[in-house]
Length: 466
Image (cartoon, rainbow, N blue to C red; front, side):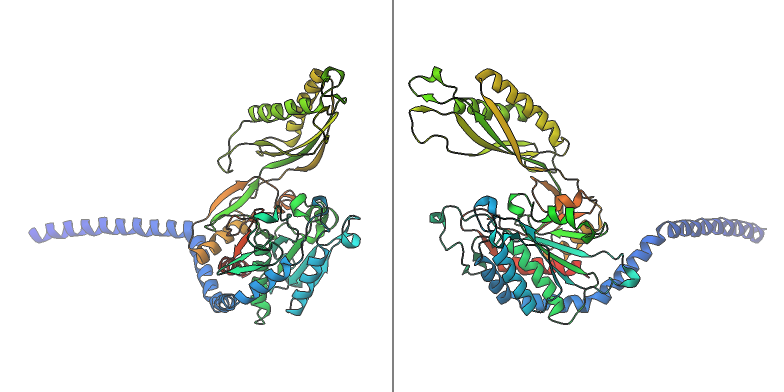
């Protein structure tokens, strides 16, 4: 009886155990079905990493040996002051010709020029240069393969007061790891990093998986009218919606900030016209200076109060309306001026359209005209609005991985004040990331860049091409 009872209990246990095992296997099956794509993706990525590892090591080893090339190329570029005609310069022709010749001598020979007429510039043109390194994925059977664009700009800002420089701004001076000179950081560090990344393939007879397109554009510092804007307008077929675009023209000291959005930009020039009179009899005139002073205060205060949203993606996290340039009016003290010219640099959060701000500007100028009896005209020196890049876009996710690999940093996504070459492409629906590791000396006296950062940035770019 005891044996029979034991057998029954044992059989019951077996049944329960069998049921539990069935449930476990069913759960495993469900989990496997649910995550099979993730497992396959992991296996593919692992296999791809194993496949690309030897090539990547060759690329990185060559880049590590390229410090002399960085110094050579930075020195050659800095010798040619490529200042925009709107800033009193001759444009980028000499610098572009130097760079094209240098690239061809160093094995990058597939080069196209896109020049746009500017009668104020040397040679009457503003040049744009595109160099191509063909990738193995980009062929007749796979013509829709994404290409990697790396976009820099040839032009630089003026040196400013050269008395504030410790070195000649137009000749590179090396101090340890740093190279001093106008343009060495903005934007020659990005240009040189891109070229070093491309040369790491070309010099070793290696072919990138993705076709590399290097764009060296004109006119970025004053609005890109002769650069990326004209390229997009006149040669839109150059770009494909699935292209990866990196603009190495902004970042931070850690190399972790990826810029995916820009504020809208309005650069506005205001011309206030009154009536000239002797300084001792102000009632005989209409003081343009006085009206313009009130206009300056009201634009700054009222626009800031009206468009007061905050967005933590940006720094600062609010819209800014800043009076900047002011032209001289009269040369003597004892005359009421009849004309005043001033400019504003407005950086507006994307939640507000530029046209909405312009409507407020119209209201304020009309009120000033009525109060002071002046006439106010304004013109737009720049008007730029930009869509944001998607946080999960291919260029952003690939860049995050490359930064992690090279710099061992976790990336953060940010917005900026606007004005990069990414904006016109984002408006075409092309995802762009703005990134580089920067010392933050751009536009200042004693501008400089780091040789080691230039090489590390080149490794990130080379990794993106695999």
